[in-house]
Amino acid sequence: MLWTSTLLPPEVQAGLSASEWPAMPEPPALLPSPSPLDAEAVLLIDVRSYAEFMAGHVAGARSLPLPRLADDIVHLAPDPDQPIALYCASGHRAEQALGLLQRLGYQAACNAGTPVLLARRLGRALESGL
Image (cartoon, rainbow, N blue to C red):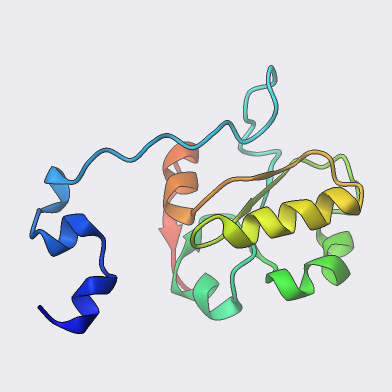
């Protein structure tokens, strides 16, 4: 086994094909109930680095890396009541971004998890480049 294979998920290490992988859990609702997710009204913000964004992002998402979020969010969402879905590679940076936005008064923001899960939930494609 190569040392790099230890970095791969157990399903890949075991040699399972993608169709044999265990089902991924559904992400939590993106916005508080009872209002359903309106995919057109939600501002999708990718808080990963610009290079990660360019490698693949949810269609319609905007790149706003976590280190720039506090300074630049007012340009993308001047209304603090704007529904915002934050995502990143694992959900960790999105959770940090969520805490920051809540401290800035953005109460309709949520951690939407990863790009793959969010794209699947919204029925959107993943795009690379601009």
